[in-house]
Length: 406
Image 1 (cartoon, rainbow, N blue to C red):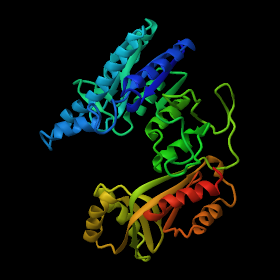
Image 2: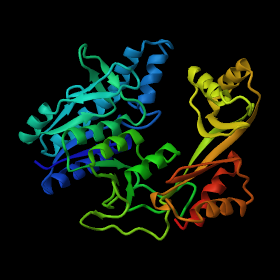
Image 3: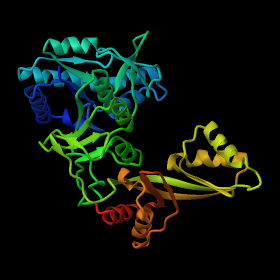
Image 4: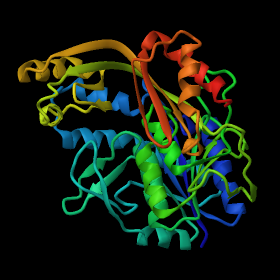
């Protein structure tokens, strides 16, 4: 069998019109000789009757301190509703389909409710269904513990993770992630009107884009696909556009032909809002100061990013909700610091930037020409980021998108 996994997000199953569009994608896959496994998210977004946030609200209205087991069980309901309704839609059009929970599809997880990790996937049941000509419609975002059969959820981006993990376990030809956009774009189109759809991007690049704020696909899903070298496509449910191919190399074969890329060595610009920057004074005579600082923060459960460390100073950023907690830790441990709130992070991502002279000069010049002060930079082989004041973040995204000819 030629197996593919097709994942459809909440907006793709939220209305009858959208579900017919999903049916068309499934039918097309069958016509093309594939045996599709369908993965669905909960129906709709916040405020919709069956959206996950709505279900959480219903439970917390009863008990703000509800047990995590019951919380996960409730959060699984949205996907169960979606899978049943989507299976019924396919059946209505003569397609033999069966709704399955994550556990029924063989997804076994640990018992970390709210952020479970997939331990194993038993694909025997799915294979039997496919061999019988039945389309499995699997609940994304969820699994089941091994011994006591409790529902678990996989955390943010869980449906993408479900699709990638099923694709890897089934040795699928590829995984399709369907959304309401036509592919991965060079920047947020709400900020950059001339943002373009990327024909192809590497696993590493899309992970960097996602980790730096681009709302494309969850990095954990991409890491799973990368580990099994399974191509992924990000496409629109509502158009026939070819979408974006995510694969091991930026330049290669895809969709039956050579992938063309633009002249830029960058792939995209991403951004994060709502950050605060800390600058910590260190004693250059105490070589353990940096270690002590980050051990204290780790022990307090504080996640930090944009790290810079020197003999005299450490710099890092946290999300604004963590500012108060971070200040308490620093005050208690005696570190002197400067807090800069109201910040954002802007990043240029591209594997082709590696080893190219002048990349940092282009980055700095683009921001300086718009009078945007850089508070801090951090870089890797494939990413250059800057902390700037949040009020300049939109302008910074536009400036870098233009400077890197995206």
